Image (cartoon, rainbow, N blue to C red):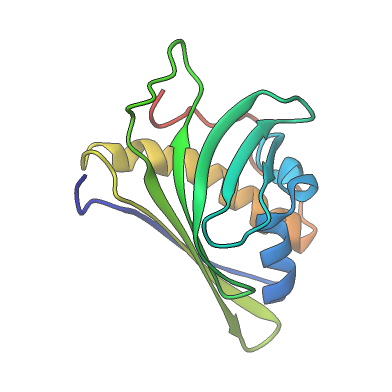
Length: 155
């Protein structure tokens, strides 16, 4: 693992609770995360599982490392799809920080770190940027800008 990290920060016209719910409710994640459904009880130590739509096909897994609704959510993350699932593939870490701002906005800061190599940053940027742009548009009632699923960073 390296110190390399993908960091993304944006302001969204919403409330901290609405943003938290959008990040943690599988029905809502499907609307902006290219039909990926997230599932967890969001208690520290609990599994985090991503599914493809309504199916039982698992796309990503992790474990809740921190959960402080609606301010901070941290979980480990591993992409599970591909021609061969590598059970030795290391987990990375995803951190969402939510800060209320004046004027009915929140600041969302995502840090995806514990990457295997600095070269991985570009791949995670390509994956996260359309997801987070869709999340912002979804919460603000705008048209979703990204129309195709991102290419996985570690496929």
